[in-house]
View 1 (cartoon, helix red, strand yellow):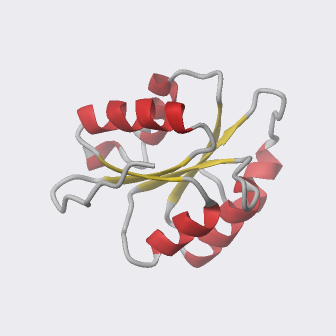
View 2 (view 1 turned 180 degrees about the vertical axis):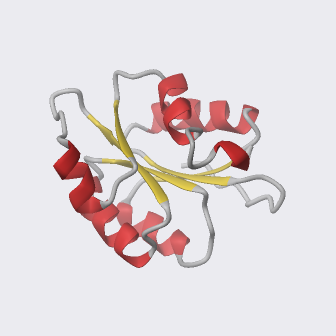
View 3 (view 1 turned 135 degrees about the vertical axis):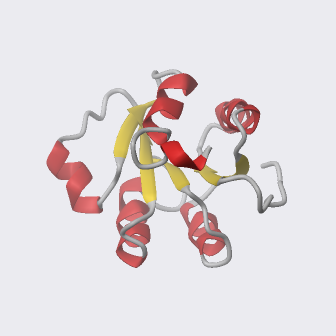
Amino acid sequence: MTRHEPNAHRPLLLLAYVDSAHAVRCGRFFRRQGWDVRLVASAAEARRLLSTLSPRAVVLDTELPDESGWLACAKITQEDPSLSVILLAPERCPPTKANLANVNATALVTRQDSIESLAETILGERLAEAV
């Protein structure tokens, strides 16, 4: 995955995706919107970066190779309940509000949704002032 040094003047978005091509497209989109973006390919790497970086939001694929995004979300939000974590799931996995509440996820977006839909989710009420 692409390495990108954080920029102190831009909000940071951490993207943990299984599909590297989609992650790159998503990263480009958010950079054009004024975000600093860090791409990772595993839940362990995302949690490791969270200990040194302060992202405004985290996007976790639910099917990461080392750990379910659901479990990673629960661990991350247990440590920082105020962090906005959006889960990215296959369409065949419709969540319930209870599922999202159990892991303290901000929202769930399916892979079939557009990057713009993901942006709307991230830039909703909780993060509108970030950009």
